[in-house]
Image (cartoon, rainbow, N blue to C red; front, side):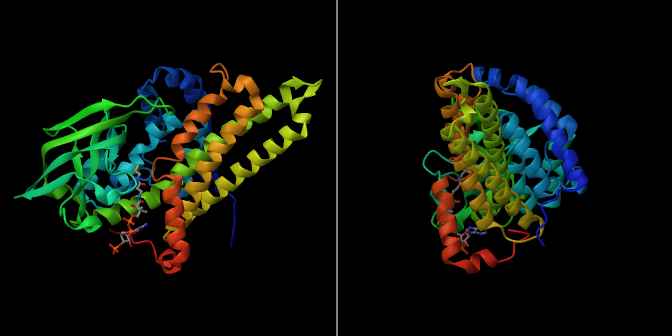
Length: 391
Ligand code: COS
């Protein structure tokens, strides 16, 4: 049965997130973007309201929301400001490999930390020479007695400067390609962890993006997530679970750009009538509306599959690819509808256009999503496998 009706609880949470985005995020978003201000105050408010850490199960103190409900929150936060939304949602990305592969003790300690106080955690996969090609990473973790010693540099790390701990991927067998990668929790206060650089970005300027180095960092062997050398699959399973959220955020950007363009087209007079009366504008508005709707439906499907315990690799890449590209297209068209004013910072849509760009790049570029889709479509047995509960 296909039923697009949200439960009462989902509608309430969606309304709460929308109201929060409207009251607490939007009024600050353009200033924080201009000044590249980290939204610490918004993190504290969102945490207080229970809009963060939605995936942490009740047994570890979290709200244990399903993926679809989390996507509803992410869309609304993305509608408010996707830079601030990314800062609020990054704990879900860092927490996913811990939930999938961490021991009970590690889950209790590190997920519990996020629930007890408004703290942040980061996901450290990408390296300067290993972006899409995860297997090319150079960071190493060498076992030494009851510890691992981690060395390497990770880049483009969301919330990196503010995180209390990192989910770090490292080679435990340098010769084994993707079968030699393992994942670990590395606390921020471990000796040898340094924040090297905060990036100055085109868009999502309120979010913190940093380069983090690990220099002979010793961590307990118990901080290993899942089995040794199984970290690549853990990373892929994490991204299957988090790409629906990214798609939701992209849908939020598209929805915001669509609304601004729709409203402006009814106010702006050219050739004696509101520009919404011109078919050239109407067709743009119509396409924007269709793209938002389709992006949302793909996003909901990718989350609903996870909630049913099914593997969602294909649906997750469909959603992430389509929603990200749609956000970019809708934002570009919104600038077009505003004409010259769309290019001016005093108007809202140029920020959305800059913010939308990253949706096509982070958590797997649109090209990587197409690669995953092509593989899943050409080898459909992979898409039919059940979601593995553990790595
Ligand atoms: N779930 C579980 N296992 C998966 C999986 C998934 N979604 N996708 C792949 N795997 C498994 C494969 O089954 C294969 O298993 P075996 O070792 O048993 O053969 C293994 O992982 C390797 O898969 P594959 O051959 O597809 O790996 P590739 O090196 O070709 O890489 C891509 C695949 C390119 C898709 C992957 O590296 C990727 O997603 N890159 C983008 C990374 C990214 O999103 N970075 C953004 C930063 S994170 S914010």
